[in-house]
Image (cartoon, rainbow, N blue to C red; front, top):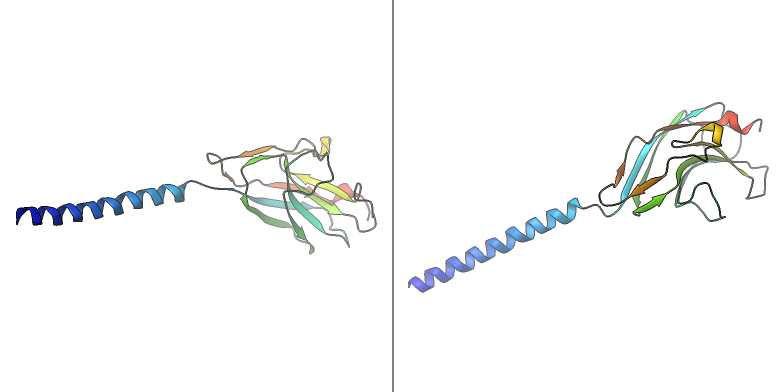
Length: 158
């Protein structure tokens, strides 16, 4: 009879232990990020062009050295005074910039039709080529308030 009671207690305690360890394991997995998130606000200055889209892009290399596309891009087709952007599920690694550009609809040359009008951490004096480089990992998976401005006066008359 004592063996029977001990067996039931042993089984019961084993089940509780399994659930406890499983619950701990799941909560650890949920807290470990698998990708990065970047967010901020772009404040636009100057007058929006009458035509052509505006792009906000996350770029692997900066300054651009190849004709490859950005890592991620979003397009704005309507004038706004500011835009809250977010890049979600960004693969861990190194990134060269977050940049804003305007695509000139009258320029068919892909080498010259994008005019950079702002970049996170970049200065007008360098043509925004000194944009802030970023690195993301499990230990550094969030970049919030990556705010900057973009100035349409830099593209000249359209």
